[in-house]
Structures are given as structure tokens and as C-alpha cells.
Length: 127
Image (cartoon, rainbow, N blue to C red):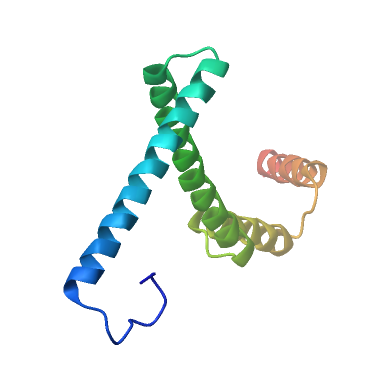
């Protein structure tokens, strides 16, 4: 019996246990081959088995950290593009407030404002 295939009608517990033992033995052989290949790879890289395993786990951890950071940055980007990011909303509110202030004051440049201030100062001294 193999996973994903229908269970034969004549399958008994003993037969299934024998097949399970065969599969387990096959799995152990494959794991031993994998360990041997990893050891060969470690030797080819100039590292012993322990160092290779440590380096492998460290690199795997770095990949996972990078994936987390990528998800966070993707969420921030989506918020910014949608306009739901609080910082972006605050910036837009401030820009709108400045624009309204400029149009309500009637002066669009600093020179015009400075000139008006001088006029008001002169009027104060003339009185």
C-alpha cells in the first residue's frame, strides 16, 4: 500500500505493518544518503559537518528574517499606496492646511508677505 492509493480489500494489519516497516527502512536509507551528501557538501565547502549544519541553520534563519521584513515592507507599501498609512495621512492634512492658509491670506510669496508687513509697520508708526 502506498499513500494516495486505495486500500486493498485483502489488507490485514500484519501486511500493512510489514509494508510500514519496509517504508520506514527505505526512509532511513534515504536519510542516511542525505546525511552523507550533506557531509560531502560540507567537505567540498571546506567546513566540517558541525560547522556546515550551524551555517545552514544560520542562513535559514536569515532567510526567514528577510521574509518577515519583506512582508512588513510590502504591508507598509500597500498602506502608503492606499493612503491608509497614518503618517501619510498626517502629511496630506498638513499640506492641505498650508494650501488653504496660503489662499486665504491672499499672499502667495514671501516677498509679498514681507512687503505687507512693512506696510503695516509703517502705518503703525504714522499713527
